[in-house]
Image (cartoon, rainbow, N blue to C red; front, side, top):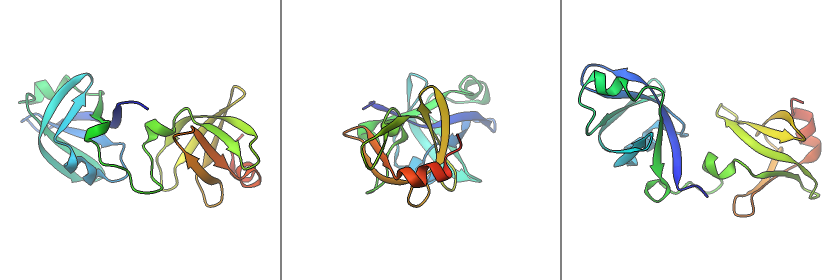
Length: 166
């Protein structure tokens, strides 16, 4: 498992005092309030302020004092260390832990490998199935089990092929 978890992306500077507008990759933007430190690129920053609104997170970071300094961070990924991140609730997982998992049927047939997760009202998973990109929603009855320790996502084969975009 990766030690850094991607939690967002810097969209742009916000205002003239160095605040950053972040696109969160978390289920709830309020999760950012739990972070005392974040990494932007490879550089660690102490979090000075957090506010949320309109689906975005606005961060004030120590060492990013003005708009010019904030502009240099545009487009970079925001990470936290796994040990500093909240433990996901039962049945919830970090995307970093799901990527690379084998997609298997309840009968044990391997269908492919998870390569991407697109967050939406119902998350959309992308699987590599023999070199072909296949999208499928994590809708009721499609994913029946997730075991990140074993690296498997189990799906109901019939339901999977009903909803998958081949």
